Image (cartoon, rainbow, N blue to C red; front, side, top):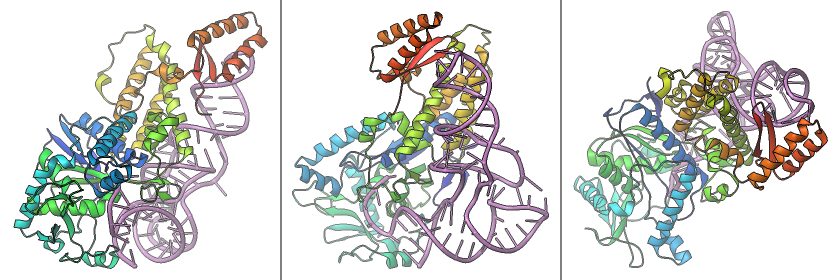
Length: 468
RNA sequence: GGCUGGGUGGCAGAGUGGUCAUGCUGCAGACUGCAACUUUGUUUACGCCGGUUCGAUUCCGACCCCAGCCUCCA
């Protein structure tokens, strides 16, 4: 079984062939930390989290790096607004980000490097680019000289002429070419800065990723990920820098870009202000529900984010848990203790198959529901255990079904579970005497407290009624 | 204007040259004391117009819409 991935640069899906099959290297762009991250940031992180899980299932070693941009004018501005030290703001936002991402079931990357921890490497790269005449110093700045890179534009299929026509940006007078971008810029005393051959200053946005990739993964990597809105100019510029530095513009084997989340008909973005933070969504919804919602669309497509989507995701996810819950009794009954099949340690093909095909998560979820159906129809404990195991294995690739099944249904009950048990027993007694009015009254009473009852062959169970 | 990617059944969202996506919702049946859970069935689905083909939602061409990028953005 091959993994196939869509590569932005080649605009085609192709088989994934790592540089070193014994060690896959992947880098994804993380956000700039100056505020609570929004669910669109979460989408990107979830997508590459799933990709890494799939890669880990297929290759012996995977190193996953996701950076944090902790030096940026937006951080400086926000810190000034809030009147807090810049480092404090960045650190607080970083902590919050890790908390939010964890709630979405995103596993920590192997390294989460920060731009400010790589200033030396950044200076080394800039110096080299200047020596190679791909960059020049002007007016306290260091700029990348775009015309010096014949491959500029090849990632996003742009011609230099087009870029000039579409240029909406004011051209700084010290630029040799309007397309040139900043590698290093001077800092006033009130701004964070580091000493450099070009005076005290701070790095431009794009160079940090070049430096962090080189530091943590080396001259060549397998996959570079990020949002599609980063493809240009961020990744194009990064490719120009690293490509010229390493004299190899194919230092990234596969460029992968996730689609945007739409709120209403427009892209969710901080500059438009139409964002929902993960933090606020978590007030009303389980992180796992949000994750399911994200995975319900293909990563390269844009996804309409609204209450309807979250509601449907909640119900869909519940049906998966329901299958697990329904099968619990059957699984625990001792039956043919068939030393479980050879497939015991394998991931279900219904789930990993689609995921290996350019991360087709909607189909993988369909596979999960297929397994759930078969589990619901299972009649032997052996089959039930096998299917349950498969579901959990599939879930471990998607980062779903990670909660305790019983807790999924019973947590946040407004009544004491002991009281609920007592009422259920009372109702059972009434039922036994065919006092159905009394039995129904108890059920209605529980329901009015948000507790729904289910009679099964193996007794009565209850659950909290979700989302009103 | 240029460059990407889209328009699928009530909703979300995959996919395929001729056979079921899947989930949610609605309706009907089974199960149940009644419910719930589960399960079965279910509503001319593939933007528009041509072309290729025995056959196209799927391939080709034109057209109409939508979103993203071309400035910071996941």
